[in-house]
Each structure stands twice: as C-alpha cells, then as structure tokens.
Image (cartoon, rainbow, N blue to C red):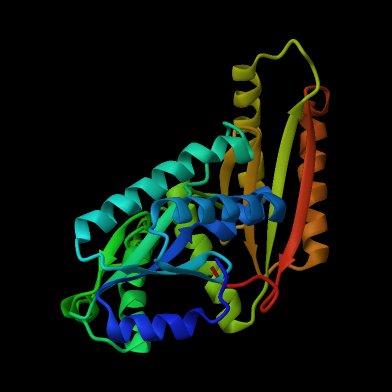
Length: 303
C-alpha cells in the first residue's frame, strides 16, 4: 500500500461514490517494537498489510498513513456488520501470525482498532470525513482498543471515561506499597501510551529497559526457571522507584519504563540488578542480559 497520489483518489472517491472510509491503527505497535526490536516490528507491519490486502476488495483504496496506521476506502460497502466481520478477521489472522514472528511466548496484546464513517450519510468532503473517522478511532483507543466504532454525532459530543482514570484511582489506593508499579499487560499498555505522549508533549525523557534471563543449568525445569525469574522480578520491583512501571513481557523477560531517567542513573540501576543477582546466587542458575535506552522527544514517535 503506497501513499502516492492516494489522497487525490480518496478526495475523488469520497465526493462521488458510496462506501465506508476507515482508519486502521495497529494496537500496541510501539510497545511491541520496543520489546522485540524494529526488525520484528517491521515483520509485524508487513503481516498486517498482507492481511488487510487479503480481506479488502481489489478496487478499494488502501494506503499507509505512516508507521502503524492505515486508511481504507471500501467502495460500495454500506453494511456495517460486514466491516465488523472484516475487523474480526484481521485481528484473528494477526494473532495466528504472531507465533511465527516472536514465537509462542508472546504476552503483548496486538490487534487493530478501526474508526469508520459512512459516505455520503456523513458527508462527501474527504478532510471532514477523515476527521470523523479519526474521532471514532480515538473513542476505540480510549476504550482499550481491539475494537471498531462508526462515527455518530453523539459519539463526538459524549464524554467517555478513560481507563487510565480507573487505573490511577487504584494506584492511589495502593500508594503505600513499596517499589514500582508492576502492572498487567493491559494496564501497562495504557500507561505506556500515556507516558509516550507525555514525553513528546512536555519534552521530557524516560528510560526503557529489557531484562532478559536464560538458564545456565540443564537440571532446572521450565516451571522452576519461570518461578525463579518471577521471584527475581520482586527484586527488580523493590529496587525501583514508585514512579517507575514494569511488566513481565515474556516468561523470561521484564520490560521497564523509568520516567525522567538519565543514562548515568540507568547504568547505576543495571549495576544494582547485577549486584543483587550475584548476591542471591542466581548467576549459577541463569544468565541476565540488560538492555537500556533513553527515550527523548522527536526520537521515539508518540504512541
């Protein structure tokens, strides 16, 4: 799918044809990219493009909007239920493809969100229609993603509660706990997107770290190894600040986000992990690899 002169084609189609204009966003792509690397992120995008191509008609207008977002004009499609089925099919096929990209041990919730608008019922001007589809997509993203919404006037007028507010309340109720916030994948993804936007908006920085373990001995079963890794997760948690967040991204891996962290402090934290790892005696049981990178504005695109 190439941008090329696609905008001119979309303007023409929206003004003269019936159909559905749809914006498609690949959920949690930036987090997937950070954890598994840009090469696997590129493969995921390629898979997503192939799936979209396979499920849409040949004369539909399709293009990438850059990164993890696409636009589709479904010519002649007026049945909302059919687009819902297309959305479900895309998500199903993406999940089926994930093991071939990252293996079976994947804990990142990947799928697509879609915002759509009916043409000509909601207008014929491409720019206005795109804005309406984007509002519908924004509603889906605020509601947790992996879903589809069709633009209606009340959709843009009504105030919806962001999941982050519920999460923030829960955090406040447990503010006396030590260590950082160890979150589930769903909750982590909400704060992750928030932090990325915060960095870009307020020109702050943060550190992302991957702590990965591999077994040293053959006499340790997979279950035992998983319990050892999870146990060391408590050590990592206690060594971090309350403002930091972490999740167990795989059975042998933790992904950390540390706001307003300098490179020097990142190195000190890595050394702290290694010191505790050796003090406990885990260096004879498993290897530990730590990768860190500072996220700054205009370097990582806001998610």
